[in-house]
Length: 249
Ligand code: NAD
Image (cartoon, rainbow, N blue to C red; front, side, top):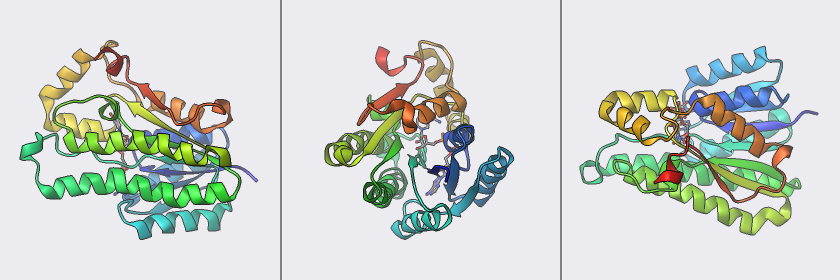
């Protein structure tokens, strides 16, 4: 039987690009997203590439939805070999003291609690079955400080810490857990964010040594490398993929 991956936020951007890249390796995929339109679109594209794929609607900030996507994946595919724990939102880009409590709760709920719930249920299955490989999506905002992203940075620094600490507990059980820290990458999330904050796009490009944003396909290549057997001895790390951005801060 083929290998299976769960991808959260699989209906758009980095999640969709990673799904399509993993399909090239013949990996079957559970596409998890709150958006039915995006999720179903990805599933159709995956089927066109000859792999088995299902869409599972979930709000990752709800533990019961997370348990459900894990159960449904096991029912359909029988195993979970890879997990791209990726769903997230950016927030409004307002300065912290202009941010309301509801926005803080929402960003933490999706980016941090959603990632933790996913790890709680997926890692349990993987450890029981002898191991597996996980990639969590952090961000440049998870490795350096920046304005306009205080709550987002809290969640993404959290992802980096979770990644290291899980490895301390479960690498011995065959679990590999890494994170990616993309800089600004041209996904729908970033396009929306930059439309609302146009001055930030010019600033972002100017601050990147390669003078351009990243592409979802470049990030998907890293995700595929880290998840699959090609990266057997990389564990607990956060890999930056940002055109030199954070390393020159
Ligand atoms: P995107 O908006 O294109 O895709 C995110 C997907 O997550 C969407 O399909 C959306 O419907 C889904 N989603 C949002 N809330 C959800 C929820 N509560 N439950 C389930 N699904 C939900 O964004 P993207 O740029 O592909 O972002 C993916 C991840 O990458 C996020 O964690 C983001 O923080 C991170 N990231 C993005 C960039 C970038 O520049 N694009 C940079 C660094 C990190």
